[in-house]
Length: 371
Image (cartoon, rainbow, N blue to C red):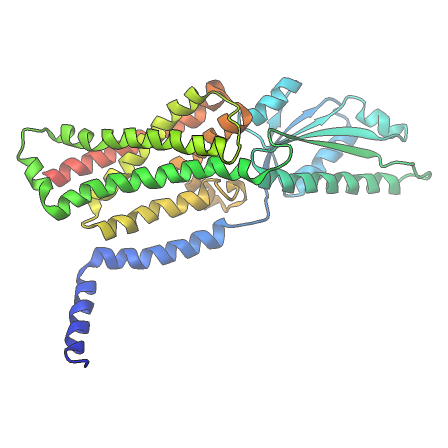
């Protein structure tokens, strides 16, 4: 019944050991997943980017801001000088929390009355907004208790009246946060895999050698492989955004043409990654494994599910060389915060830099492979 079992086991073992590239990927993926999952996934949000508009400037207001800074949950990114700058900082994505202290803050406390503090929260990231909302109320309560403990006559109300206001997603609906990110992840996975499979399939069937002897130039062959999938990627983006709008009822607050412009940059970046994978992989199994090397970090470290500010510094730096990090910021900026080109051009510029670099490396390796 088991005749020849030993021979077959020996043959398959030898085949696995001989295919060093596949064996390396089999060992790399579990190690990479464990490290990224272990360090990147942190459900406690910290280092929330924050801007301040302090119209009071006196000791009492500075002590309140010190409590925010020393809590570990907020990371001050600067000050602003107007209400418009305060809101624009959140629209641009420079800050997720904005604190405004009124000019009569200290005067109200000295009179024994309640002083209001306005806190704006970026509701496009519901995870961060919910955490920030709880911490803001806790800090206001703690500061109120500290002030009350120094007084002889207890007031009828708490000294600090925090007034948090959630912008763009006041109900903190999860689909508003998750679905735009899903659009970016789906676009990346499909365009990258389609491109990688297209070239690897040519290798496996032997038709790549036939194309090489035709009058088609190497650049023409490369662009001929990329352009059809660029069109597919753009159509996929339109289709995914339509499903988001009409099934999940997520409104698009910004300009769809701005979204489309940055979307094409992201598509070409992923086509370059797919082309790069195809120059390394010898078969479709290797192409899938190599694609996972890029896809898994993008899911965990792009801000799609977990805020990158809470990650360790090395992973935080690595997150900024992932194209999906900038694309998800653009998606949520345009869709939820109605951000325009002037607000997001820096995100797009970094995505262009990464995209050009990836395409250059991929094109170089593709020509070398043909040679």
